Figure 1 (cartoon, rainbow, N blue to C red):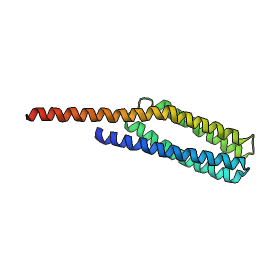
Figure 2 (tube, rainbow, N blue to C red; figure 1 turned 120 degrees about the vertical axis):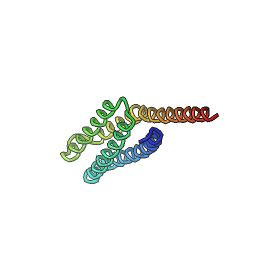
Figure 3 (cartoon, helix red, strand yellow; figure 1 turned 180 degrees about the vertical axis):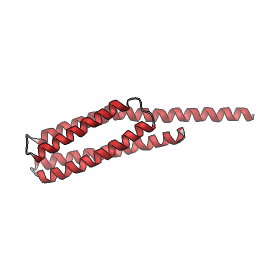
Figure 4 (cartoon, one colour; figure 1 turned 30 degrees about the horizontal axis):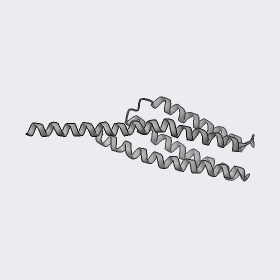
Length: 150
């Protein structure tokens, strides 16, 4: 894939990540409301939805990081693994009627917001910078081509 195509893919990926983050937060907030209402069956279904959506989101994000040779890939992936572990613990807490799962969901929301506003923002900046670098290289290449024909 050309560097221009990679950059375009990266920027599309940033917009997609933003949309997916909004959906994740919506599911988390629905889960909070459901737990506060005491509906553990509906909460279990929302956990399934959140796990499925989050796994798909993480796969897409990790693919973007690999495609663009993101230098912080391993650390970012470790954070994803931590969230998956939190979701597993939350599921077990809901299924086993342990503790107050609403507290765990609040911690999950805080973790997710922190991840989005730190690690994911760093990734977005990296992808945007890659696009900017590719545009600069393209302009320079076009200028060199014009100067050869003049």
